[in-house]
Image (cartoon, rainbow over all chains, first blue to last red; front, side, top):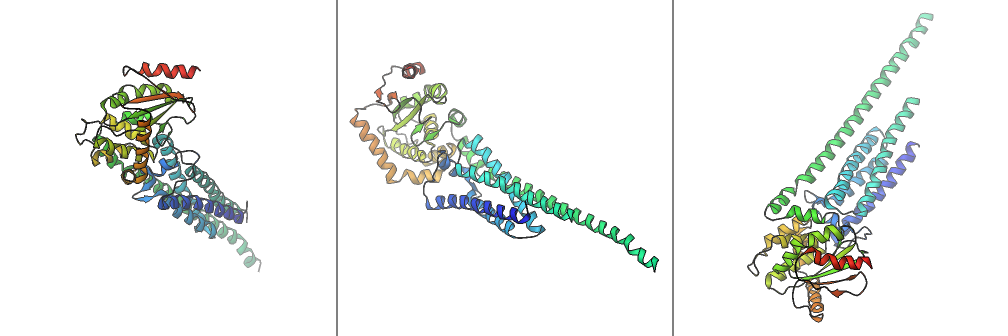
Length: 140
Length: 256
């Protein structure tokens, strides 16, 4: 995959993630029930793990995805490194939250799982972006 | 002339190699720093998530009895509003109860754990709680909060905790502190429970249950109705709080 293809793919996935996190923020502040087929979305969203020092995790997600989107749009080594760093933070924290859902809250939020899948893909593509650019550089 | 021409090709590749090597190293350093910072930041986020709020939870749990027992009993069992257990479980057992009633507490402590372990956890029975507030003002205060916890699918956790911490009837044991601690230990958001508990929607729901129970002639608590899920429910007579008394009709219905 070319650098450009990877950037477009990461930007598209980050936009999807932004949409998911944005929906969760909207539902929280508008106080509307989440569309949920797993039955555990409200339980997860109102557990104590849904906030970080008073800030809803969904808001942190919106900020995180926005930063990943910016890193995907930007060119250069700094943008590639920022993309890897941001997606790694997000993937690790998402993995922790998934464990919390399964082992502590005992409820699954489908939106969180969808976001987990998105961030896993973003991380893989961000690493590929960094590696593919290096290969191209070395081949020159 | 040959000497001056020969000099550059010898030195030039050397310089190129050095330059490429140093760039590669600096890139490696950049990515090492980026990933290191990412891991450190993720660890900080996890630590903050674990620590913030856990002290409040610990304090709440220390003021209550049976927090671990309740969490262990109900962990992993689906809840939705007033129901506990798989939605399509073959048997439904409805309990009409008052949170202040001592016999309801006895049932919760002596019978419910066995039923949950034997039937609800396996997906054979779904339990439904129909709350009544007949003993006195504490009943209504507690019932409003427990019904509000149902909005977060944590009704059964909060109900079980209140039964384990039940005080003498109308002694004022249902304090705001107890309700806050119980909702927190139940895994619900206390501020939302407190807000929903005073809503007209919750009050209307409680009134509807009371009207339905009165119409059905239910004059004591606890009262149970049992049947195949989706079918007609029948009044379940019992003479003691022995889990076997409740297990037998469940087994009969499951065998059908």
